[in-house]
Amino acid sequence: MLSILRTQLGRNSVWMLGGFGLRLAMQAVYFVIIARILGPAQYGAFAAVVALVATMCPFSGWGTGNILIREVARKAESFGRYWGAAVATSLVSGVGLCVLALVLGPLIVGQNIPYSVLVLIAASDLVFTRLSAISGQAFQAFERLKWTAFLQILGSLLRLAGAILLMLLPSTATAVSWSICYFVSGVVAGCIGLLAVRTQLGWGKLSLAPMRGEVREGFYFALGSSSQGTYNDIDKTLVGRLDSLEAAGSYSAAYRVFYAIFAPVQAVLFAGYARFFRAGKSGVRGSYSFARKVLPVVLMYSCGATIVMVAVAPVLTRILGTGYSEAAHALLWIAPLPILKTISYMAADTLTGGGRQSVRTLLQVIVAVTNVALNIFLIPKFGWIGAAWATLVTDALLALMLWVVVFRLARDR
Image (cartoon, rainbow, N blue to C red; front, top):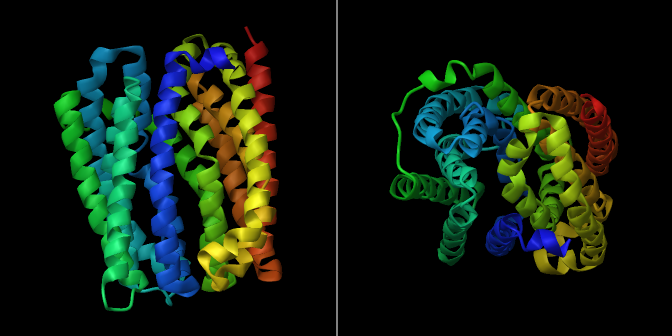
């Protein structure tokens, strides 16, 4: 395990861990600020919209960020061609998805959430934050993870500044006022991301042409990420719709703690993503060989992360306020998630690196549909506890299916 940490993968993991750590520290601060000044109902309204838009975000860009990493990891001189395609595709698809979100949003999240919240969050996450994300992926393709980490930190720093400003203003904070701050931070982060790529890596012709032969593969990447976003986040939206905004606020708060504790695993996955593609030139057998070297390290951490979540739960209400008493119980219910997600993410990236993104996507779609169905059935009966049950069942199912496929393909010659 120590030998891995001394490699470039280890150094890049440290960069990403530092980036995740700083980002999550800032997210924790602005999350506490926003949760306290908005209250469970207003925060629940904001969280429900964010969760809905998150399921659409992967289609903004149509998977071109992943294709950019794949192509540059294998052939660095292709950067300009695929970077220009990534930016152009993200702009076109992002605007189109904004229109779709504004039409479908009220039907899904309900009429009790201000329409302006939907407008601001959709524009921020589907256009500007997406540009910041593909900028980070451009540096990720060259394994220059310190720049990827910087761009991720920048977005959280800007939102922290917005939260502090909102807290200091004399007027009462609402989901609308926080959404304005959220939008402005997304615009600034997106513009700085594009500038960083231009100065550090170069540019390319803005054109959709390079994607003509990649439409199907891009769709698999986008659909897979959307499915992942669905079974990760749609439960918060459904809790807000089928139970209450207060319940959605507490349940979302527990997930914020999980994401903070899970950050080191995400750091390793980010750092190793391009390497899965290199190792996977020979197919799943090659990417599986790389995964076997990394999995024991991250799995050991994930077991410890589950213990930490159980230990943190009793003090969560003291940090967030009495309005979030249910968040402590929710954190205990989702405590196994670090282990389940580590197992499934490693198998999923193994398939992607080995050229089997279509298989990964199919399994993720099956799990996403199953997750939504379970949530719709369980939340009206059991509230957020039903959402937690649905999450645990579907994450375990996904991990099992992914590894069955990986083992089978890795044995094929």
